[in-house]
Amino acid sequence: MASVLAVPLLLCLLASASAARFAPADNHLLACGATAPAVLPDGRRFVPDSGCASTRLRSPAPTLPSAASSAAPQPTPLHAAARVFSCRASYDLAVRRRGYHVLRLHFYPFEPALASARFHVGAAGFLLLHNFSASAPVVKEFILPVHSDVLVLTFVPESGSNAFVNAIELVSAPDELVGDIGTLVTSSGTDQNNGLSSQVYEMLYRINVAGRKVTPFNDTLWRTWVNDERFLVSTESSNSGVWSFGGRIAYPKGSRLMTREVAPDNVYNSARSVSSQGKVTWGFPVPASSRYLVRMHFCDIVSKALNELYFDIYVNGQLAVKDFDISGATGFLAYPYYIDFVVDVEDEVALKLAIGGSKNSRSDEVSGILNAVEIMRMNKTNGGIDGDFAVSLGMEYVASKGIGEFARSLLCGFIFAVLAALASYFGPHVLIAKSFW
Ligand SMILES: *[C@@H]1O[C@H](CO)[C@@H](O)[C@H](O)[C@H]1NC(C)=O
Ligand SMILES: *[C@@H]1O[C@H](CO)[C@@H](O)[C@H](O)[C@H]1NC(C)=O
Ligand SMILES: *[C@@H]1O[C@H](CO)[C@@H](O)[C@H](O)[C@H]1NC(C)=O
Image (cartoon, rainbow, N blue to C red; front, top):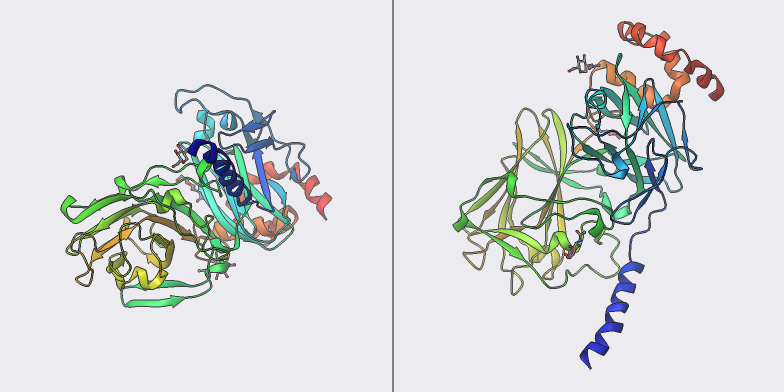
């Protein structure tokens, strides 16, 4: 009898889960340089970047066919081809819904020439990657506001080099993904930091604390979350514990702020705990002289009742929250919650995060928890995330104004030494520039 009942129940659960699945207004999935669509294990279908109605490629560029190489593991079909640019080129991606978008750029250097390529990437008026080189396979992810009907994604090779890309994802972000208010943590204390919802973010780390890897298959925003173990700096096993939860994560019904798009169940249902006497510290290597958004996710999957946990949160060595009362913040057990911290890292080699126990907690064994962490680099100027020197300011101009303006900016004193070398590359594209004016 039970099994007869179970089947329709399961079907019904599956139906409701799929109905609730996030459906982005914009969902560009491009297999660059490919001749046939590539379907990923998560079901997404990437289409070749030529001949797609909502995408226009503005540079005639050669395509490198797939090639076996000893340097990198065998590429998947999505990464077996690349679009290679010997000169500046842009993709125009149609935007149906303005606002935050997630942009993922896949770089899979299957040839030595690709691994040594140096180039710059700009989008929506921001310099995203400066003098970038992908010596190993990497997916770069950005979360950026788009205020126009077209996102112009521009690749500019360093002089004497090429630029390349294997795949592009541009997906509308749900509104709840980026909040406006964070807690600024400095050596002199904490302060409210407004205006987070106009920044550009480069995703550096997405960590599922004490949990297993979550792949795009199990994440409605097609994110990847990795285990935290290799980032642990100091843990005495007596001072920390590992938890996993088989129950249901209590996402608030009908909430516009906390949904599975903030982080999925698989991320909230594991945690690492700290004892009332202990401190657990993680360290994440980050580029110096940048501002970071640190999103720490908490979900009390360990307590039997409310108001058992109290703990301290440290960001970059500073006490950011004293005696955090997670029940006071959520009002329920197994209820997901996060705090956004903003922190400037000047010269440290690693951004350190920690949870420390408190004597106010009910139990000595478990005083506090951490379920997940995201670390994003923020733009440091109006136009760039990656670098702030003269050449990047020139680039930012390029990215926002297009080729015609770029040609003009050359006449206006944009570093001439570089120009002389670049001039020949730009020759044929003056024609393209003209067609835009
Ligand atoms: C890019 O990096 C290379 C190697 O580090 C360096 O030689 C070159 O000057 C850099 N170019 C710019 C524009 O920063
Ligand atoms: C998705 O999550 C479920 C439940 O945690 C797990 O059993 C499954 O292996 C995951 N699938 C993938 C492809 O990660
Ligand atoms: C980042 O860019 C946005 C949009 O141009 C701007 O409002 C913000 O002030 C910039 N952030 C910094 C730290 O300059």
